Structures are given as structure tokens and as C-alpha cells.
Amino acid sequence: MKKFAIGFYVAVTIALMIWGYYQAIYVAPDEQTMHEAQRIFYYHVPSAMVAFLFFAISLIGSIGFLSFRRNRPDWAQASDAWALAGAEVGVVFCTVVLITGPLWGRRAWGIWWTWDARLTTTLVLWLIYVSYLLLRRFAAGPQVQTLAAVLGIFGALDVPIVYMSNRWWRTQHPAPVFGGGDDSGIKDPTMLAAFGWNVLAWLAWGLLILGLRYAVERQHQKYAAQEAQEALNEVA
Amino acid sequence: MTSALWTHLVKDLRIEWRSREAINSMLFFALLVVVLFSLAFDPRGAFSQEIAGGVLCVATMFASVSALNQAWAREIRHQVLDAQRMAPTSGAELFLAKVLANFLFVSIVQLLLAPVFLVFYNLRVEGNAWLLAVVLPLGTWALVANGTFFAALSIRTRNRELLLPLILFPIFMPALLAMVLATTSILTGDNDPTLWIKLLAGYDIIFTTVSLLLFDVVLHAE
Image (cartoon, rainbow over all chains, first blue to last red; front, side):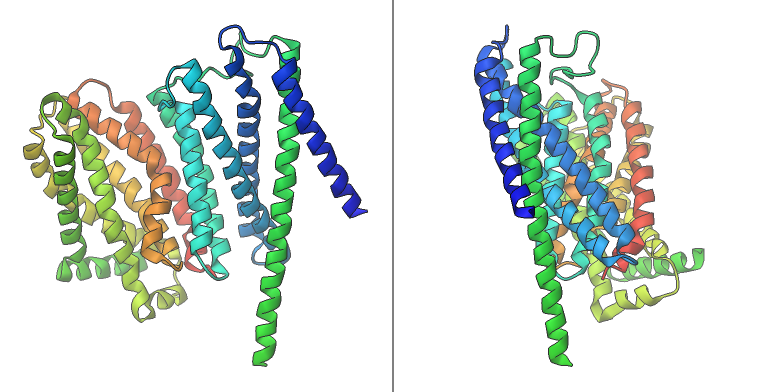
């Protein structure tokens, strides 16, 4: 039953991604000023949304680990696996954002990169979570989970400050498409539909990878605990 | 509360007074960075006014990393850190004492470095010079408080010294930006640095509070 459910989810995800691609490339109308280059928007923005969501999952996992580690070891281990999976998959999606952004910027602005608030924030966010992954790789032993959880909280705390500081510094990124003001929002219904389908497709895909990564980490934890137990038995 | 903090602080100051390791190494390192930047960018005229603030902040940042690593590496020897973990006081006091000591060391380095800067970069302070006495301590506090915390965190890992800059620099970025922009606007007198001073103060308050709250978790991480 479980296998069937996973297989079904994978099939739906693949179908959604094909449908999203079709919508973005063939159905959505040509944008008036940016033309074809605008279509990268259907990949850039959903990836950014998914990346931010996964970093939030990572933060919740970090907080969960620190609160459960004393009295509920199993919950703590699960939280830690979520924190790691969220950070890792989030970094992948954030990388997609950082690659698709300059591709679009080169066409629309004539430059690859600018030190604008949102670009810099995303880059610093990416750097923070890469350093989080480095810590997890470099640290050994059981304390790595605690140390990583602490760094995860620090990193998340830094994000709003980075954003504010850069906003005061300079801003060039287009104003928010949604909730930015009276003129914001996508006016064309087919464009909005293409955008919605792509958000859904990439979210489904991201959740699939996140779930797989979580399962792998849980398995890894299980083997580590088993090995520790066997080593103890040998001593005894 | 204060006696444990005082004991840690006096101990660190005494060690530094006798060895002068941290201050000497930081001073020389910062001096090297200043010279290297001067060679790389050839600062003259108005251009030197613009980059001097950034060079000062980055030089302090690089220099303090080595000293901050040493601050905890010293405690690892002879299992001093284990003894401190068993001591019936809160880790926050140990942390605060280390921050205060290192804050003093880095500030001394900056004071000694300032005349060198004025000479090498032919600086004139166009804005309110006394504001530098607010900006530099605030920025240094941000650097030292976070640096001490992450040094304690990375010292528990396999690669120790290597890890500190890798995790400190990304977190420190907004404070560095604020520190550089405030210093530059004071030096050039073009802009008002108030906003950046506020940001630095906010950063200091937030991160010092969180560090004090979470230091016990790092100290006792098993």
C-alpha cells in the first residue's frame, strides 16, 4: 500500500511537471517587454518559493531537535533529519534560483548580476546554508546535531537582517509581483494558470526529493544507532 | 553571577598580559592585510577615502579569526574546557568573559592600527569623527560576540580552526555591510550614517542575546 502510494505520487509529480512545462512554454502568452526571456519566471519564482519553504522546514527541524533532545530522543532524531533534508534540498533549489536569475537579468537588465537587496539576500542565504552543510560534514560524532541546530537557528535569524540591510543599501530587483501594490499581480489569466501549475509541479517535485532525503537520513540514523549498540554488545 | 565572569575575565587578561600572543599576532596580521590591499588597489585621492573603511573592517575581521580560535584552543589543552563544563556556573558567564576580553584585544589593535591607516591612505575625516568611536566598537562587538560563539562551536568539530571563518563570515555579512557603510560615510562625509549605526546596534542586541541563551547548549553538546 505504501509502495503504491509513493508510486502514485511520483507519477502525479511527473505528470504535473510535464503539464507545467507545456503551460509555461506553449500556452502562456508572450510578455510585452521581455518576450521569451520572461518564461524563465515560471521556473525562477517557484524555485525561490520552494527554497524558502524548505529553509523554513529546516529551521523548524532545528528548533525541534533542540527542544526534544533531552526527553524525546526519537522525535529529536526525526527533527534533525528534517532539518538536514530541508537545508540540503533548499540549497539545491536556491542554486536553481541563483542560476536562472542572472540568465534572465542578462536579457532584461543587460547585466548578469547586481548587488540588489533580494539578489544579495538570496546569495547570503545560500552561503549560510552551504556553511551549515559544511558544518555537518566537518563535525563528527553525536554533537554534530546539536551544533548544526544552533547554527541553523543563527542562520535563519540572520536572513531578515540581511534583507533589511540590503534594502536600505540598494534595490533593483523588480517589485514584488504579488502583494506589491495596486499594479501588482499577474493580469493575464493564462499566465497566472501557467505560473500556478509550475508552482504546484515544483512543490510536488521538491517534496518528493525532500521526503526521499528524509528517509535516507532516517535509515542512516538507524544504522548508526545499530552500530553503536553492536559495539556496546561486543564490549560487554 | 559576577564572580565567575570576573574570574574568567581576569584569567584571560592575565594570560594575554604575560604572553601578548593575541594582540601581537592580530596587529601584525592586520598590518599585512592593510599593506596587501594598498598594493592591490593602489589607493590615491578620493578613491582611498572610499575604500579605507572597508579595508579597515575586513582587516580586523581576518585578524580576529586567528585570535578567536586561539581563545578556545587554549582551553582544550589539559581538558580545561571539561573542567569549565563541570563548574556550577552558567556557560553564559564564561562566554561573556571571553567576549569582553577579546573585545578589548581587538579594540586595542584597532586603536594601534588607526594612525597607520591615516598615513597609508592619506585619510581626512570629513564627517563627524567622534561617530567612529560609536561605529567601530559596535562593529567590533558584533564580530567578537559572534566570533567567540562560533569559535566555541567549531572547536568541538574535527577541523577546528578551519571551520570558524566558514561559518562566521556568512552570518557576519549584514554587520560588515553596516560597519563598512557607516565608516565610509563618516570618512567621506557624503551620507548620514545614523541608519547603519542603528542596524549595527540592533544586530548586536539580537545576536548577543541569542548567543547568551544558546551558549550552554553548545558548551554541553554531546
